[in-house]
Amino acid sequence: MKNCAVILAGGEGKRMKMDKPKPLAEVLSEPMLKWVIGSVKSAGVDEICIVKGFGKEYVEQFVETLGFPVETVFQAERLGTGHAVMQAKGFLKNNAGNVVILNGDAPFMDSKTIRDSLKYHTENGNAATVITAKVDDPTGYGRIIRGENGELKAIVEHKDATDEEKLVNEVSSGGFWFDTEKLLGVLGEIKSDNSASEYYLPDAIKLLLEKKEKVGAFTADSADTVLGANDREQLRELENIAVTKGYKCTL
Image: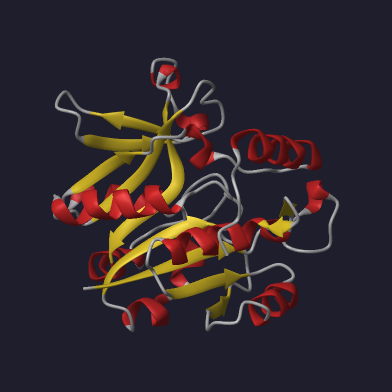
């Protein structure tokens, strides 16, 4: 069975004070997007599609430097993570099997987490698997709500969480494994009936659960897998973590 990856890299870097897309901001002199691609490749996943949006020409230039083929698709309007994945439908149809969907600005999503979560995903016969982590401060993250037996019940966004749900410290990393066929089956059903009028990828999880498909949650060993940066200060924090913990881009 084939495994492929879709990496979301269309975010704008306004608060980074840069003209390029946010995933091209550098940690230890390497773009965060390169860190993610390195982890995907090190996990044994070679078929990769990057969803570009803002500053697409910069992503195209970056891809040319990689030395191996990577497909790119263009998200002309940034209407959410679900909408971004919709732009990769052609790629998904050509790569039956399993797909890992990752944020291009999460540099510490490591190859071990990708491999181990795939193993969990396939051994349990899941239609989808959310990659999660337990963090000290879950503010701003989607909470992982589990049932009495540890099964995944829902992903609740911070703004929609009750006071009790906000106490949950297991959060979504923004990374997911999907059975490609099952994802394609619900992708068109995702609606934008929310305050932002956007199509959210976690709604695919909700739809699969409603269809009684098997959905799981894999907890990463390190909380750092969820980390990203929205501004220069947070970027410096990522640099400090990388230096302190000896993290390196594997590409």
